[in-house]
Image (cartoon, rainbow, N blue to C red; front, side):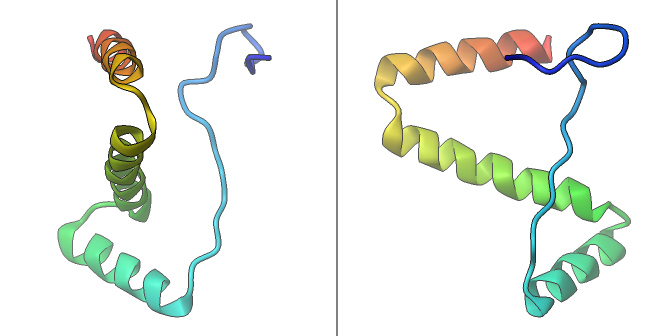
Length: 76
């Protein structure tokens, strides 16, 4: 079932939470501060890169092609 907002449209982004070790939080905060980017930016970047690797490992070639088409259409 697809989530909808009050205008009956799918949300533009989803929220989630995660727990970080103190060291990981410190590292994330440091890179965010030094680059004037948000911690959210780096969390999203890290997840995106890791998901791409997981998809290469676990998805069939055809599934990868379909996924790339879907991602390309969303970015246009």
